[in-house]
Length: 263
Image (cartoon, rainbow, N blue to C red; front, side, top):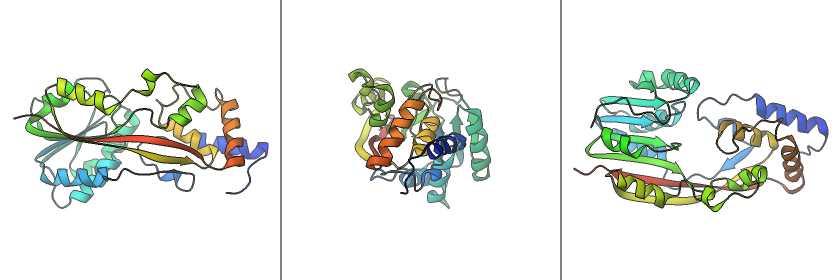
């Protein structure tokens, strides 16, 4: 990585990170700027195997539809007879519609915490990758008896090295949000059976400050209210640290749920 120590380069990097569109869940822009190890279970490909055997499937909080699109490609030529996806952010919903409609999927705009607009027992497979807050009662309701919820969730204190650089030390309660044991208990309280649960901690590296800016603009719950202007001092300090020491290292946490609605 070349030297980027002058004022102009710092400002240019901030501007570059702030200009990249944030719609969808395509992270290809980060290539060469940031890396994140992937969980060993290969969620999208595994989801494709589930889709190949499903009759009616639903993907919750699909983002721009990229993950479901990849999973469907992995499932080809088989695919569910009925296929739907939900998304709460209109720019993502439009992007997902354009991508998934040719694959026979209906994309429904549903706010994050709203009830799902589907009949009881409508789906034998419900998928989700990185839902913000799983609605366990609604998931249980729309699953057929014997149906499966197969999802990759973000775990506790994910990338918190970066969060705490900007926000300072976080409480144990905040760090424990999204804990798989807590989510297991919530799923079971909704009448679901946890068949499988796996968790991994994965290395993440940010190679320049533009990648940090884009990441925090895209994953908005990491540093709520983040803007370049509000956090310019922290961004400058982190830029200087990366230039002096190399990539900023953090760790993401992920867990994989295989959950069934009892017959």
